[in-house]
Length: 317
View (cartoon, rainbow, N blue to C red):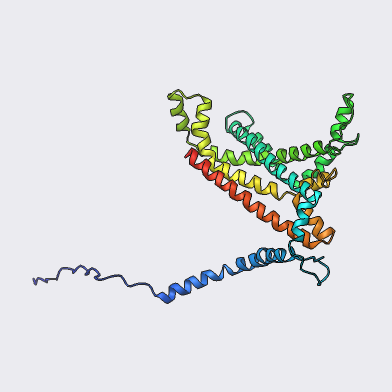
């Protein structure tokens, strides 16, 4: 019987030297292919944002009427007209009032509402859905509904109830102060549930062990809120206030559908003034100047809000 000797298998030699770099041409080609997909976004940005903004800045220094190709250079005359027109100043005042009031009131109501909806009780799911779906309809539709409810005549829904109680009708939308109150009230009513849902999502991400440890240490509910709940809600607070400030500054549909900017100019907004001057009165120069000033003011407000949010984050971090 013959024996066959076989050589033991030889382990493969480890690779020596540096790994071979990828082809530079392939990397460049992949980057170029990826950048191609950005071209539609860049084109849309240039077409819908950059070019109209540049045109608005240019027309703000002219007396263009929009329908005629001829215009003259007027310098800063349109900007001076903005600060001397009482209707424009009234629109600026109500816009700032609306943005500030809705931001503060909705934030003050949404956080406690989210804390309440985060607790266990019968019908919790229905309550969450109810508060959320209130803010789903468009504000233009909400404004039309509440225009009927707050109608200053005797046939308005609220005045009908007051009449059944033996009270005189109230001029809800015919009085300047009451009209401002009604518009802000409806805006708060429509948005508080949505923002409460935003805070609720962050509340549900807080571990329950933190509250159990705080209870063991003897912390009461108020101490738990400021030491545990509030620091965890800072990111939601930043997002919520940013959305409220930006939406409040550019508001148009709700005041317009409820009051048409009246009575007088009491509920007039900057966006409504831009539309009226530029499209209805064909004063494109003043409308463009107002739009440029409004854009700069919005950027300033957003920067201040972001700085305050950053300081708040550092405070609770």
